[in-house]
Image (cartoon, rainbow, N blue to C red):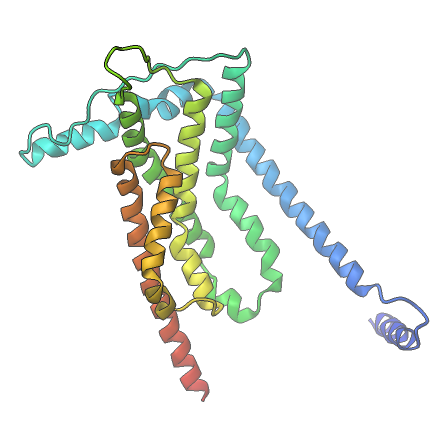
Length: 295
């Protein structure tokens, strides 16, 4: 330890005299890149393992998970219809039957679709670990107070993501496919609805991932409020602009242009925005209390 201290002092004296170049910052940057590389490698390994596991059971997953929202027997259709009967409103909540035959126009279509399902499914399954690796990378740059405030962040980020993914899969996807499958163009029957396999896979992937990321709004509001970039008064002041942005986001997430699907997405996002206002308000009160204690 004494030798290292003496060497450090010797290097400092040499730098002050301009005898050698200061390479500490460069080495520090390289060390950060090396740490980042290993975080990415470990995250990629877990992602690939999850994707391989999905690919092994791809037939069962496609039949019972991916293609399920396109069948009339999907749990959401039955649950809404049963709810309508329970409320004694007849078949008001029963959506029209839907069966979506898929076609392929390329030789590699089924294989590439299986790869896409495995990769996106791997991201969803491994999401908590992927975020954990990101957290481990940025944790050394945080102060003890910031680390204390961020306890439980992995759980809440993962919880919000899975809630959004479930919302997109069980609610938005059925309404989207039901609308698109029952929408007709013209009255002569010249148009026959037969979407491609790739189009169906891309649509359901966008819905699930889009809703999963959109449901991170409360977590984002908490982080921004903690670091002082937003406040509850700021969110309240720009609420009307946020409504417009939410409607635009809902239009992007929902592949179908019908108002029902966009309303299904917009309403939870508006609720999440109000939750974000409440969270930011609580953070403001906590910070005001601490400032008062310090003063």
